Length: 143
Image 1 (tube, rainbow, N blue to C red):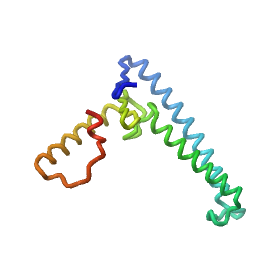
Image 2 (cartoon, rainbow, N blue to C red; image 1 turned 90 degrees about the vertical axis):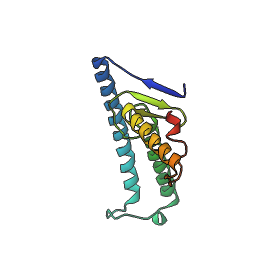
Image 3 (cartoon, rainbow, N blue to C red; image 1 turned 135 degrees about the horizontal axis):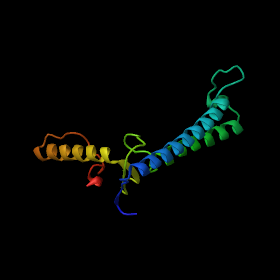
């Protein structure tokens, strides 16, 4: 895929269809995440409903617990990297901009804000007033 790519839909009917597909995918993600989280909570709590630490779990429970934690993290990572949701603000609506350097999709509103923020940082650096750490090339990757 190109370094930077914009997926834009101009037809309002197609925009509505796209949004509905995104809502369905988002709902499926939430359902799967909640199911996984419930299994984690079942392992985490004892018969009285009190929380247990990992030290109190058997090795089989601990193995399953860690698998479920990894699966939960993977679900979030895959969803946040998808075109369905903006990696910056989390919105489902709108056209998307792909940034290959970060391998994420962003809504066009966030891209505008990132451009503005990067321009402000560059202006401050030019005058010597910028004292924060570098953003790791994040803003520059959108240019």
